[in-house]
Amino acid sequence: MSDLVNSGNANAPLLEVRGLKKYFPVRKGLFSRVVGQVKAVDGLDFTLGRGETMSLVGESGCGKTTAGRTLLRLLAPTAGQVLYSPNPEAAPTDIFKLPAAEMRALRPDLQIIFQDPYASLNPRMTVGNAIAEPLLVHKVVSASEVEDRVAGLLERVGLRPDVANRFPHEFSGGQRQRVGIARALALGPKLIICDEAVSALDVSIQAQVINLLKDLQDEFGISYIFIAHDLSVVRYISDSVAVMYLGRIVESGTAQQIFDDPQHPYTRALLSAIPHADPSKRGERIPMTGEIPSPIHPPSGCHFHTRCALAEDRCRSEWPASVALGAGHQAACHLVQSAGTEEA
Image (cartoon, rainbow, N blue to C red; front, side, top):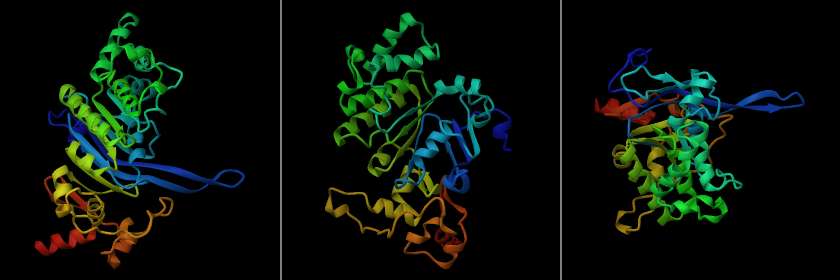
């Protein structure tokens, strides 16, 4: 185990994920016998710095949301470590090894904003009560102070304090998402998982919510894991990006590295699909044939080879190791390995 685990490190990241896996059993028959596993997340490794935003991107079904929920222990992990360092001078904590009482005490630090703001709010609770609930459960403030704290949170996310007595159905989608942000912000978190937090909103409202998230990050030093499929939004908000395909990260790096110098064929195909208003900036579209394979029976070798026009025999039999391409830039592709060998 590295020195990071054994002792404090002033430069330690806020979060270090190692070998994260989440499999769902496939059951069949009268006795619900396990006949297979859905490998939704199949060995993720990444780090998240303090006050930074890392985006997880990829097509629907690649495992982004499952990864986010698993690392918060909203889903029980199959394997792996999530090392959390609220204090850079202290040794990090493996979230997966914490007993229930200690995990509960850690919950204020780790929050989530869900994709559907209506489904994530109790329709029978006023928005004021929804925001107040975590404050009371974790005893952050006394009962007499809750009303003022809720009013301040509503104002901070761009809503009037007098809306606290309204119910979720009385708000627009953008307003409901602001309520969700206020609730996530209530306990003073150090990390927020933004699970497709703007994908259900109109474009103009998306911009407002994204700017709100950036302002909150600047003000409170919050770190985000931003789960999204809209790459134009990802480029704007991210410090780093990890591209997922069928439960695995195929390329990762800074936002500039991923968008300006993509190396994996899958990353290039995703970026080629971004629409451009200026015709002169439109590049050649890289097609991907077929659908994402089943995570129950993933293809051998590189999982992407069934849809990759550049696939070779080696791609069909061997999973490529991740290759370092520069400071923090990595890609898992045999073609990248070959190119690096030729240049050397």
